[in-house]
Image 1 (tube, helix red, strand yellow):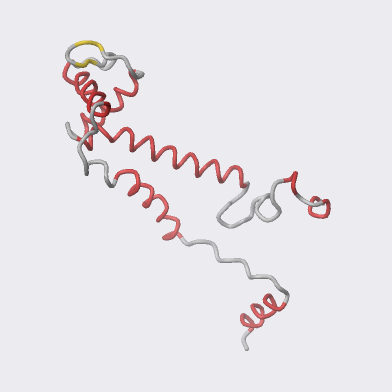
Image 2 (cartoon, rainbow, N blue to C red; image 1 turned 90 degrees about the vertical axis):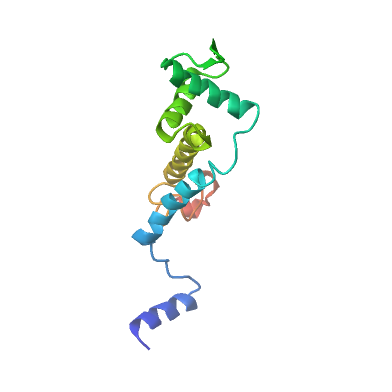
Length: 153
């Protein structure tokens, strides 16, 4: 038996498992790729929903047509049911990707992706250290309030 097999056998006999190898670069690149796919894959596969989604996209298109980035317009009149920044973001998508469902939904997809990345960062912060490798202070023993007195020392 080789030394690697002996070490694994000793770990199994002691009732512990060997630590898993950290994920490689390719595996870590899959997470952002999957998030991008999830955020943007089906944005143009269906028409805009009536009445709300179409109305907000039309108000943003009115901002583009009037060349006024501060005042959203619907049928030539001011339309102020959402903060102007929301309409500005939708107008940016329409200006970049064209007047279509992809352009109208680009701002929402970007916001969704930003929230996913923020949740991932929060998880890493709360886990402490590197959550993927289990090296944080709470990775094996749970929150400080729930540890036994022997685990606290």
